[in-house]
Length: 440
Image 1: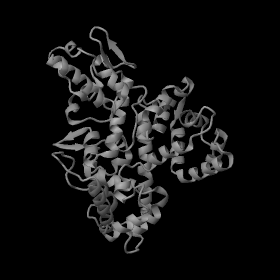
Image 2 (image 1 turned 90 degrees about the horizontal axis):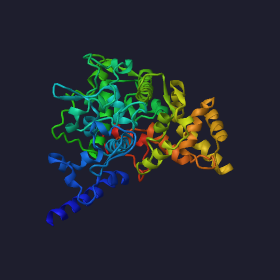
Image 3 (image 1 turned 60 degrees about the vertical axis):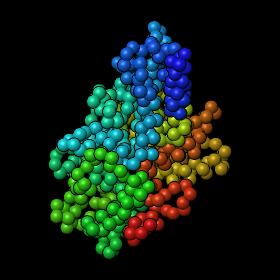
Image 4 (image 1 turned 180 degrees about the vertical axis):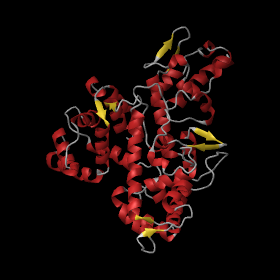
């Protein structure tokens, strides 16, 4: 009787633990009355984390399957992808930077954790697994790494952008460089010139190494105060804060100066490189194009966490003609450029709402044309409206704008580094000024 009650409590505990992740996952994993004994030996007491995703080879299926002999349900690939996607989304948004780095870094070298360029993308941008792959996650916890090689994305190392900072030729990014990259990503592209002038304390028109480190170190201290870095044994770097990048900017002796042209070019190139890496992530087979469903995942990946399942359901129900449509690199890049003008897009769409009461595809294209000088490819607009439109063909523009802003300002740590939050009226310039002055 005691064992009977224990099994009942275990069943209830599994359900309650898994429901916050996804109700369907709880019902798929938790066992019915008396079912624990169906699992032999050591398998009987699987950890809940493992039970949530069940990773045997037989589970690599597109839909959930049931082992009728035992009454046990396992999660198919699509369900496991959702679980991991939401889990990794929370890691990016809620964890301290060293924990994010350690989770997504795929390389261990001399006891240190290192990132490839694709790891950097996964740590900063919420990406869904490529459609034409069996991948289900972008990173791994320490205990999972020994059996994750077949499930992690292919390493992308052929990038000229990061090669310019690679002083030892290994192609990897250390933790110090990771922090420096985050610092640069905080800077809005449209404000590069004014922010450069705020770095330039002596108004010389160029930055010295001392000026550069003064501001970046203060920005990183803000990040550490909000999300304290506690190493807890994690070997994430050598302590040289962005050594390769600093050599590129200021020379091996640190005496060169960084001018506005170089500074602005670097900031724009860094954002562009993340866009390129995201496209390569979804172009898993290197066909030169991605399916429409992957573009839809890119659109919806930065929506509110509580709405992720709803948008993934919408994408699953899109017409096959949109799912299989070919989105070229040029198409993908065109939408990335539109993201950089999200403020102007928001003004234009709000104007249509105030005057017309709704936004249709023609209105959206008109706004895009006014902003960029040319319309978006029609297939991109069709997918945007399939994901963020209603049954009347009108756009839920605020949901779309939220996702675009989150992706373009992506950067998970920008609010923490600059002290920006919903309750604060401080703007980016005031926060940078406080960093320059060395005060809170």
